[in-house]
Image (cartoon, rainbow, N blue to C red; front, side, top):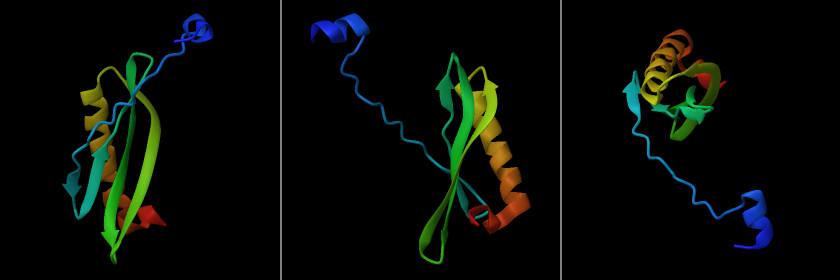
Length: 93
C-alpha cells in the first residue's frame, strides 16, 4: 500500500455480494434488499415478474430507516405486497 493510500485511508476492498432468496407473492418475486446506512437499515428491494417471457423489474429505495436489517426487510415485504395488491402488473409501466 502506498503512502497516500495509507494517509487517506485507501485500501483494497472486496465487495460482498449477498444472495437474497425471493419471496413469491401472487406470481411476483419480492427481493428484500435493505441497505445499511449510518447504523440503521433503509428499506429497499425489487419486485420481479416474468411477463410474456420477459423478466420485468421494479426497484425501489424508501426513506424509512429502521434499527435492524430484519425489521427493514419485513416492512419492505409488507409494503411490496400492498403495492402488488393495489397496482398489479401496472408496477412495471
